[in-house]
Every structure is written in C-alpha cells, then in structure tokens.
Amino acid sequence: REAGGLKPLAKAYGIVGFIRFLDCYYLTLITRRAKIGSLGYNGIYTIKSVETFPLKPAERGGGEDGRDPLTDPSAMLLNMWNRGKRSV
Image 1: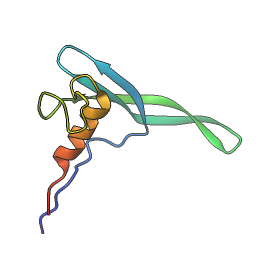
Image 2: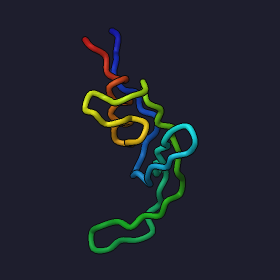
Image 3: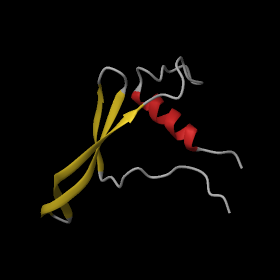
C-alpha cells in the first residue's frame, strides 16, 4: 500500500517565528523544552533547543489566492502544504 501526504520534519512544541535572509524565509521551531515550574495548573517551560527550516516557494509569482509566496510567510506554508498532498 502506497502512503502519500506530508512527512514530519521535526516534533515541535511551538513557533519562535519567521526570519528572512537573502534567499527565502526561515521558520524557527521549539524542538526541546524543560518544565521549570507551574502557575496554577499550567506548566511553565524554558526553551532548550530550536531548529530552523527554510521555506522555499514551489514557484515564483502570485499564488492562487493572490498572495506573493516570496513575501508572505503564510503563503509559503500553504504552498509547502499543497506540495505534500497527492491526489488519490
């Protein structure tokens, strides 16, 4: 049986943010954390490790919704999501 779709890159606990360098945007994710306390029933964590992944668009130009994947990080994520999908 052939399985298609998305493949996980990393287990993440949160998003630190996006940054743009020369060629594309990069997504920084929290990959390790440690509990340092609690406030009521909510845990308080410290970041132990982060990983940064390049977000390269599939093609240049405006997307289907009119957003430019070179300047809009959310459009880049959508393009990456759509590239991972396969029709059945």
